[in-house]
Image (cartoon, rainbow, N blue to C red; front, side, top):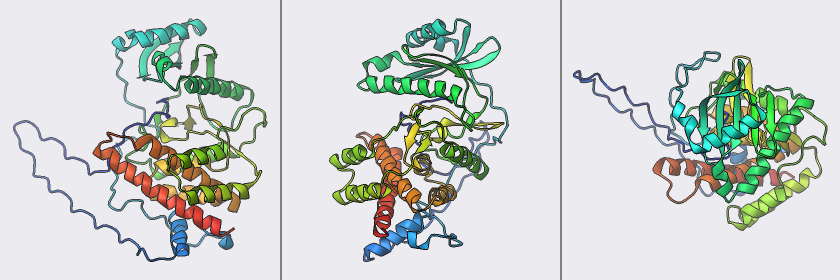
Length: 406
């Protein structure tokens, strides 16, 4: 909870649940492995470019511009990878209280945590630490209380000083503090932790601790939330995206031309890919931007009794429409129904909204590939990397089809 989503979290493969271990002295029944699912047939390679583009648009749930209007009944997004079964969800229901977290007093005595608590004490002398929620290389999160109010303190980790990304980490932290302060003056229409105190110079942020559980604990979760939870999360994200605060409160957070050039220079985008994306950007012109969370991962969304709560606002700002939806689409690879809902929302604003979503989706997938496709990846990570490449190929074909309709 309240974890920074900029660091990739190793994911696990979608395998069947292992049977419970039998009690000592009593051999359990022999488990018969389930038969493998047959692979879905692939289309022939001899299809024309228009046919492949139309197939990509159908798989993404996007319809061509000339068929704008009511959606064709029965349109579906096929599963990204045939045979990927999802793990059964734990027996946790919305609104059910979480299990008691284990408190480790020794974790509060490490040098890094003690240094972080010293910074918290400067702005909140009444802060009483209770538990270390996270001690990472970038951020340290400590749960505690101020009086009877539960709060969370977020600090920049001392190890971050020696990181090559130190300046960027500090800039992101300063931006998050500025966002929370802006939300005090301009209250957004979504639930988020209330700001308690902040030290801009020492990178310390103290905020309300909201009761709830993360929608997922991994960046690319093994099991997706329930359909009802997905609808609630999409409603919260959509409500934020449609909010129009004063234009001078937030700033654009992504230089799209620079991002396209960067991925093109390292070979992740071909010449044609870069040209297609620039063509869509040119067609979007100076269209309206959209306020987005910027890091709308499931691990940055809490399922509270009162509804979804969005945390970690380091990347909040103005983006092309559909950026948050593109982030959610990229991590929900095992839930075709959720992806279909996201695609429907992405094109509900018309052709320009659809094209903006496709540009965002390609860039988000390029970022995920760059984060995970590193030397030394294990078998589980390689499976996830192959899935990301499949998604990226699907998005490229949809972009080419969209360019062809202009």
